[in-house]
Amino acid sequence: MDNSATQGELEAGRGYEALFVPALFAPWTGHVLDGAGVQDNDHVLDVACGSGVLARDALARSGQSGRVVGIDPAPGMIAAARETEPGIEWVLGSAEALPFDSGSFDCTVSQFGMMFFQDRSKAADEMYRVTKPGGKLATAIWNSIDQNPAYRDIVAVLDEHVSTAAGDAVRVPFCLGNANEVADILSQAGFGDVGFETKTEQATFPSSRTMVEVELRGWLPLFGINLSEEKIADVLIKSDAKLSKYAAPSGEARFQTSAYIMTARKPH
Ligand SMILES: C[S@@+](CC[C@H](N)C(=O)[O-])C[C@H]1O[C@@H](n2cnc3c(N)ncnc32)[C@H](O)[C@@H]1O
Image (cartoon, rainbow, N blue to C red; front, side):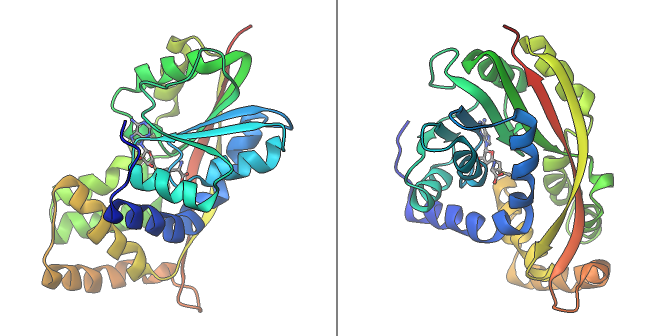
């Protein structure tokens, strides 16, 4: 795959790292690395690494003699990851075709990526193949949107004031709320000791408007939904009433998020 990102893709990767990582994703890395039991000297693969927050924390745990590799199909994410931490091996590629030898990693981890895999069974087969016999897998997956009320509120605003297609786009990251579905996929790939634990973490966005605006300007266009400036201004006003309950005195939007950490082991 071509490893170069356009300037626009790089800016998008940097934007994700600057906003979404501290707001939503950084609080989860400890749960995933604990689930996989990452320790000193481990060789760790982060699948769907994005801008690399989980891989960076894996490196901190696996130490100087460990090896950490992050893989993601988005060139801008990989470029932003490389810029932030040049000491990790960043690879452009997808979960369904991992370009690594079988049995290369003690731990395979993935944080909030599986919902986007085009072929989850193939990805599970690949994660199984590259994990060493006896090695562990851990993956974080959002619970259903009903367990993530701030996003349920945004979806309600979009359903009512934009379209159900817009609401559906924001529902996508919450589409694997049924942990048993993921457990079945991992078991069918050959993993044993498959289990999960539900966790909650606090998300903190600079404001509720920022949170909604990134959905309108950054996420909906990925689904071919491009709103006019007038419409964006209107939706932001409509969302104020619904999201004001999450406003902290500082103006930040703070709310609880719910996800589960699925763990499994490749048998010896
Ligand atoms: C919500 S982000 C999570 C990124 C990162 N793990 C984190 O915690 O910040 C989802 C990531 O999944 C990646 N992704 C989408 N389809 C993928 C696939 N088929 N294989 C691997 N990664 C994929 C996207 O490019 C994106 O970086």
